[in-house]
Amino acid sequence: MTPDNIQFRTGVIKPVERLKEGWALIKDQYWLFLGIVFVGVFIASAVPLVLIGPMMVGIYLCFFRKMRGEQVEFGTLFKGFDYFAQSLIAALIQAIPMVVVIVPMYIVMVVMMITSVPRGGSGMAPDESSRVVFTFIGLELVFVTVILAVAIVVTLFFMFAFPLIADRNLSGLDATKLSIQAARANLGGIFGLVLLNFALGMVGVLCCYVGVLFYMPVSVASYAVAYRRVFPGVSQNFAPPPPPANWAA
Image (cartoon, rainbow, N blue to C red):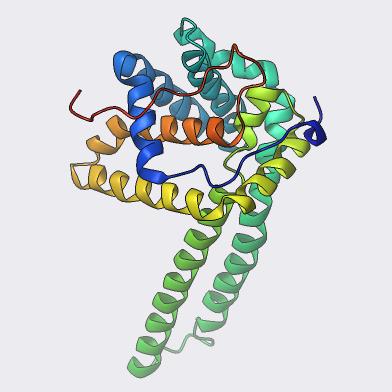
């Protein structure tokens, strides 16, 4: 399948509704999906650039099976390695913006550290020492802010890349291009969904970091549902996600 043959919809990502649909999708098999997402993320963290692709594709394969009403097995997670080459290409493309930003900033930091070291064995005056410390603190704040901004942009525009590989068997390059196109057409909804998941994730972090682990499958489910709303199933076998359900249900 080529990206030219794939159409996508706009205006269908409503953050709260997609989050509710994500919960409705997995609530009857929550613990299974918790294990799938946790193990997938854990394995991906071992060698992120190499393993993040196949693990994310495997995770989405599990969610798409659930959407189709098929039996979901834990082993489906590892079927992501069937798409290893293309998922690796997509992961490498996604890493480019981060590398372009991080490498120059690290170089600047190292140069400043070297140039701030006193020469000739003389000590640094108190005023000069304070100035250097505050300069480094300021640079660190700028560094973190820029990294967060780039990470958000990458998340927004590359959100559909791995699902497209899993669902439509696209190449890594084609999946990335189509993901960017669909994200630009749904930017407001995607941004709202990412922001909502980030806020709820921070609440989980405040709960001794344990809460965010239990929230992960719901977050990923909301992204899977958002993908299916933007890219409807290619046949009747691909059922749409279930309607929103009461959270207390």
